[in-house]
Structures are given as C-alpha cells and as structure tokens.
Image 1 (cartoon, helix red, strand yellow):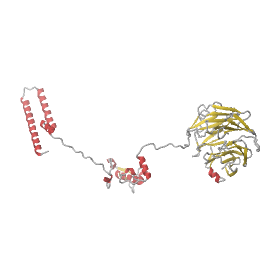
Image 2 (cartoon, helix red, strand yellow):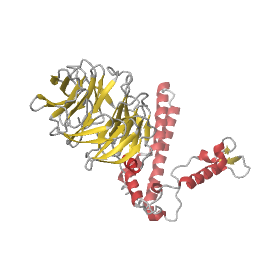
Image 3 (cartoon, rainbow, N blue to C red):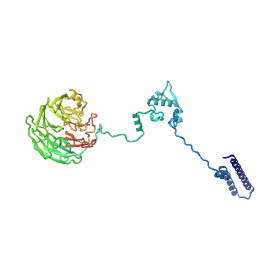
Image 4 (cartoon, rainbow, N blue to C red):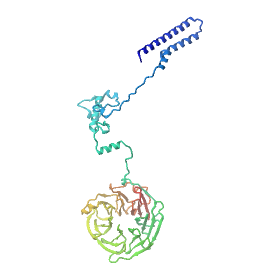
Length: 507
C-alpha cells in the first residue's frame, strides 16, 4: 500500500474518533444537564453509549468499514512443498516423527529383573531413561538388524530373488494357505453309514466282504451258504441279488479282476464261481494232480491271470483265472498262512508259521529271496501297498511290522520301519488303502479289534473305533473301495458295517 494512502487513512480514523468523542461528550452533557429526564431514560442512554463505544473499538468506525470494502483484496500465494526425495535424505540422519518427552525423564533400576543384565555396564544399578532407551535400541539392532522395508530407498540393499519375492508378498494381500491333499494324522474324518447289507443281513458269520473293482457294488458271503450283492449308495444300499449254495459254507469269496465273476471257496475239494453275466453258478471239480482236501483260502492276482490257492504243508497252487485249470505249484518251508501280489503281479510274497517271508518271481516261478520277519515266531498275514513301497507282515503275537520293500530285498534280516503294536491278539487281516496312506489291521480274537494306521507317521488313528460305534464286535473281514472313499468291516453276527472316509471324494 502507498505511504500517502496510509497517511490519509490514519487521518480519517483520527477524525472519526474525534467526532465520536464529541458526540459522546454532548450526550453526557445532555444527560447531566437534563434534570427532568426520568431515571429509566438516563440508564437506557448510558447503555446505548457504552455499546456504541465498544462497537467502535472492536469493529472500527463507519469510515473504516467502507475503506475495507473498497480496498482491493490481496492475492494469497500458496507455496507447495515438494515431497522429499531419497536424494535429499542422503547424509541426513532420520528423525522420528514423534517422541515422548517422558522417555527422557527419570531412571531405570537394572537390578530388578534378569533381562536387564545384558544392559548393565560394570556395577551400575540405575541408569537414566535416555541411556536405557539407547542401549535397548542398540541391543535390538545387534540381534535382528534393521529390516529392509524400514530403510530409506537409498539405504536399502539390492535384494536377491528370494528377498524380492518376500517383499512382493508383504506388499499384497490374499489367501496364501492352500489345503493339503495329504491325509492328516491323529484324527480321521470317518462317518458310519447304513450297513451295506442292511436289507438282507446274513444269518451267521461273514467271512468275506469285498467291493467290486469298477461298479459301486459290494459282495457279502459267509457261513450261511449265501452270496449277496448290494449297490453302495451310503443310505439305502439296495440288494441286487442273493444266491444260495446248498451245503456249501463260503470261507472265501473274491471278484475276478474284470468284475464279471465271483470265485467262491469252501471246505470241499472243488470250488465254484458265479458268472454275473449269465447269472448262474458253475462248479469246478477237484483239480487233478494236486493233493488238496479243501479250497478254503485263495487270492486273485491283480493282472487277472491267476487264482492262487493256499494248500497244505507250504504248497501254493497256481490256477489259470480264465480256464480254471492248474498250471503249477510252489513249495515253501512250514505252512503258508498268507500270500500277496505286487501291483503288476510280477512278484508274490508268502508268509508262514516259521516266521519267514518268501519272495517269488511269477515269470520264472522261482523263489528269488527270503527274509526273516523281525521278532516273528508265527506269521499270519502279509500285504503289499499299491505303490509297491511298503510291505506289512502280521504275526500271531499281534505285532505288525511295516518294511520298505527295497530293504527287504537287500537283506535277510531287515529291520522294519515301524512295529505296530496296537493289536493285543493275533493279527488275522491286514490290507492297504489304494492311496497307501492307510493300513487297516484286525484280529478276530477279541471285540472291536480294528485299527487304522496312518502310514506317513506310522501311528494309529485315535478316534477309530470309538465308543459310539454300533454293531462292531468281532471283525472277520474288511476291504477298501477301489478309490478309497468307503471302508467296510464284516462281523461274526452277519453285519457288513459301512464307513465313509470323508477325506477321499471318490468311491
């Protein structure tokens, strides 16, 4: 603003104040000289005078207001502050955004707790709070250093690929936890469904329960001389068909590999099979050339070529699954209690009462290896996992040894990976799950003697069988469905218990 304009403005202010002062004096003179004015009027005029004087001091006179309205408004310049770059911080020490003044006041006693011992220097007992904070910060930086994200861009180290991946992870959000497809240990998600043969329970001991290799069908057979087929749906399990075999108590029954036949063995010297396509029972007469009084126990090879009957005195008889004719026999020491084939049927394992496990080459028909089951006096069962990695050998004492098959083939006295001791009576059945994550073992010498073993951890599931399980007393047979979604247990009272393994989605 020019100087002359400021002088004129000050002169006008003085003139306005002088006029207000003259008016004020006139009003006071009038009030003092007017003796006839009433008291209320005098007070009102005094009040108006005081308000006018106060208004003039606060807001200024009338001339000041007019001058302010006429004056041109000043242009306000806004200066934008530039964001500090990383270069501006080079050489400057970073300062915290906020500091608590109380942290610099007082002192800390270093003798109260053991965690203060690393902060003490010499025999000092108390330090100022500022020194305590500095020492604590120094100790933290020695242990963990300053993280890369807390440094200025100019101070950060060039990160490796791994560090950059971590940094990218920290700058984004999302669900990084994926559900594992592996079966968890300790607790198994299992649900008891309607019994597989609930529409037609057997009147007696069930010796065989088995799932069809491709269709959702299950067979049950037992000492009541009846073979039954049921559809598996988990709710109603309707019966498909039942076949009664007169004077033929069924000890063993298995589906053929193609699922078109059911082979049946009994105490007689002949055996039978049920042609599911033709719907009729066919009897195979006594096999010539072998001394066999009964055909109770047998297995079917996975490739569908052989039916292997367990004979007396260590004899193993190989029959053609197609023609049902005898091909050849194998002989092992002692008695043969159980046999099992590898997945490709190139090898066969046999276990007997002498505690020896024999490995047979099916193509050459020779015993290529023999080893002693660790700690076993009398063997009862043997089974091979579907991937060929594990071999399970059960014994009369109830101990089930789990071996690595490669270790067994390289030693005559291999050590088991794990000795399962959850059974207290003789192991009568052992079977691997199709995924090789489970092993089911059972004993028909006592009640509820069924255990599911988690193979990766070699531990038993603690929640099976539980106290609320109904219908399970003496287990006599068991099987897994082709893809492991179901598990069935046959009992001595004719019930085929059906369980849904919820971890596995398929039948």
